[in-house]
Image 1 (cartoon, rainbow, N blue to C red):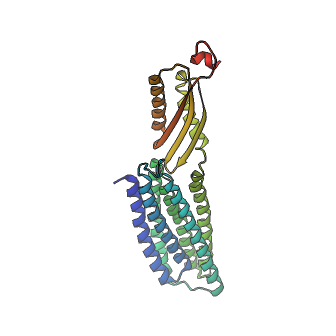
Image 2 (cartoon, helix red, strand yellow):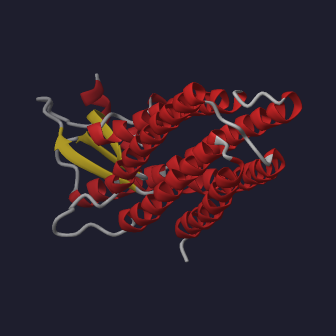
Image 3 (spheres, one colour):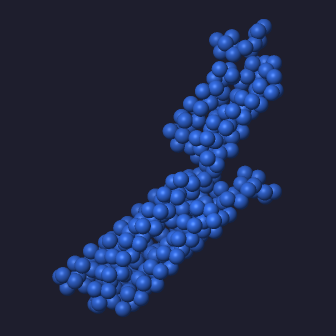
Length: 298
C-alpha cells in the first residue's frame, strides 16, 4: 500500500480510539474541557477521513475532465478541515461560557488525567509520523491532518494541567477556563491551516527559494540557449507546475532543442518530485548575420 495511504489510515484508527476514550471519560467526569477535547478529536477523525479520500483521489492521473490532474483536491481538503476546526472552537467556547454561568462539578479527575496523558502521547507519535510522510511526499492533506493532531497534543496538555490544578486546588471553575484557552489555540491553528491550504487554490507562485533553485537549474544549461523569460510557477496539492519561454539561436536543429528541453526538465524533476514543466521554445528575433548564443546575448 502507498505510504501516504498507510499514514492516513493510521490517523483514522488513532482518532477513532481517542474519540471513544475521551467521550466516555468526559461523560463520567462531567468535565467540559475533556468533552471539548472529545469533540476536537471527533473533528480530527472527520479530517483524517477527508485526508484519506483526498490523498487517494489526488494521486489519480489526469483524465478527460481534469487535464491538469487532481492535485488541488488536497488543498480543498485542507480548507474543509480548517473550517471544521473553526466550528469546533466556537462550540467549545459556547459550552465553556455556559458552564461558567451555570456552574460545574467535575468528578473522577484521576480518570481524566489518565486519558488526557495517554491521548497526548498517542497524538504526538501519530502526528510525528504524519509530518514525516507529509514532508517526504509533499502532501498538504497529510500535513493538515498532522497539524490537527499536533494541535490536539497541545490542547490535551492544557486540559491535563487544568485537571491537575483542579485536583490540587479543588476549583472546578478552572475546567471551563481551560476549555476556552483550548478553543483559542484551536482557532489559531485553523487560521494558519486555512492560509496554507487556500493559497495554492489562488495559483500563487512557488516560494522565492524554490523559484531561485529552478532558475539556477535552468541557468546551468545557459551554454545551450540565449535566454529565458516569462517564468511562471504554481502548486496544486503536491504537484508543482512550471512554465517558461526559452530562446535559442535561429536555425537550431529540432533534435538539439528537444535534447535541451528534456535535459532541463529532467534536472528540475530530480530536485522537485511530482513536477510538470512546460517550455515554449522561441527562435532568436535579433537580425544578425551569424545567429549564435554569444552574438545574440550582446
